[in-house]
Amino acid sequence: MITTLCSSIAQAGETEDERVQNMANYLVDYAQRCMSSTRATPFERAFLKFHSSLLFVVGLQFICNMN
Image (cartoon, rainbow, N blue to C red; front, side):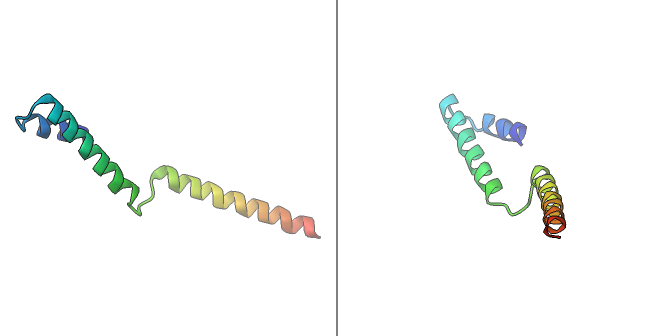
């Protein structure tokens, strides 16, 4: 993604300041689109898997301690 961005902006024929500003604008736009995405990252999926397993174990311990 970054390589494509830099090569396409470098061919635009603008000043260096304009190219840098365009890259920054693109990166901000890309980050905002990623943050609004509903897809979970591999890290989020691993956390949810760990978290649900942890809740299951804590729930079992709570049930066992009630008796």
